[in-house]
Length: 454
Image (cartoon, rainbow, N blue to C red; front, side):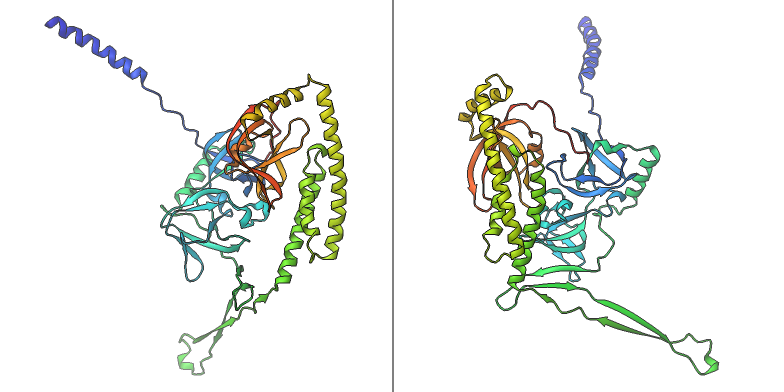
């Protein structure tokens, strides 16, 4: 019995040491305080320079709370003085309640905070990416009310719990003094509150929809209060020491009469904006290699204006010229593709043909197969965000791909992919579109594309 007890006493410490040795070590935290090393550095809604649009700019010396990093991007909290002039959008719906004076929002149900697309001048219709949430009970100060063609949003200061992405080439680890400064600025903020903008805008524009009895109006709400102070002179010398009476008069400047726009004026303004957008896209497409450029899609967009009987003559003249130029380019593009097809047939040993053969063999397993590229036309700024699927042999666009996760597709750019999903023709966009249910990479690209600095 004594021998058994002695063995137990000797063996137990061995098991204890072995158990401690097997305990997993805690993963090191990637969080740190970072400092911006250049001016006009974009903070984006995702870790990509091509598919994630920017919602603000940072200046040299701005101090950031970095919570993670990977693939060349720093994930940062929108917290601290660096974000005092960066805004967010909250959708105007029943999840938020606007105060009677129009200055404050109360959040009564958790709602998304969207990143404004500064590349599209903050257009609410182009600002769709959520970067955080406002929790129940949060109080947000309204900077402005903005109306898109489809949605109305409130412009607010970006809350401290949202996240953005900054290129790691422009972030270094902060010194001890810089980190202390950041910690002090955060500790001075009221606990448990969401950051709000303290400044007030002098003018807010809101579009009021037309009703059966009133036309559509654009109201500019602006009132001014002027205080006039006059001092009353007291004639009795015995009461010279008495405080002089002050009379205060408030003068209210009435807002100007609302501007009324006719339906014809609104349509003309929309046509001119569409024309200006197409001219910007025309410059971009013209600079691309002709074999793979989106000249056919651009021609269809110009044709919408050309077929509009109300289009102004000066716009129509330019549009006719653009259509003729694009038709010539489309014909040249078709000849280039025919030559490429002949070359691919003759040169069976090229890498391009091997990829084509692989793609042809894989097509039976997928709805469409092709090389995934970004689109210069459907870039999420002026038109919805779509990706192009290009035939690997001749560069022809097979279909356009919709996405709910741009960051995921951005990592597949330049690779041959097979996509399963519903392929359809979109009448509004005038292109074949596929809504993917599954995407698989079939081959890897030879080299990664050059990353945009910001």
